[in-house]
Length: 311
Image 1 (tube, rainbow, N blue to C red):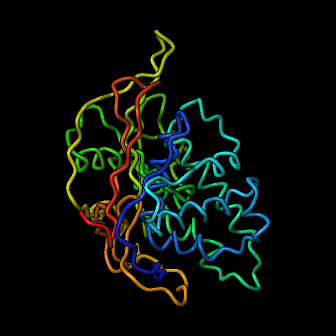
Image 2: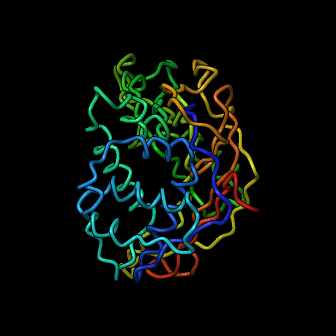
């Protein structure tokens, strides 16, 4: 794991709501809670002139994180960051979609950092921190062989699990990784059998992320009303989860760890659920929630575990 930032000061700070930017604030708090990622953001090179203007999102994110860590202000302004991202602060966005776009943008900016002075673990911090690898296994029920495409691995940054019909996160994860039957019109064209055969398809984990993000699929599109609707079913979750039942047998026993960052000390935190590098267990340290029964309105909040702050 990356070494983490210096211990946080006492006294947490909030983020200013510029109108309808609670979705951004909640996401920023969860990202900030992961000390390794915060340290990588701090170690990026952003010239003073970039930090002084609203055009560089990475520089403005550094400024927000620095003020949050200093802890002196009761409220930290997010206006320069919002301006750098060209956000319409009067329009509320979906926090999940915004998070995907923000991480993609940060990944692009951090990868452009100079190789001569910025270590790889900083330039590739987004992928090193949040990405795992998975594969989609399609197995013929006649010959028992996997399709050629089953060997292809894909990066994933979150697990999108169903909510409706599941009262617990464990149940939702079991459904997500369950095998799907391919029969009839959906039968699999097996190359080995040279014919269409019944088959099964399922997601398998190939490499575990250092920080696991689980997205509860609460929104669906109603084709009758042409509107998004929210599933408000309660989902219970424990302080920790173990992905051991869902990993492939060839998965390495430990999560890959990037190069360490020199000169940092302190505890550890994560924006999501985080596990040690030696097993498949994760500990819950952050929850980003949408409050409200409607999909197009409401309020976003974040609850995070921050070492150094009073409980």
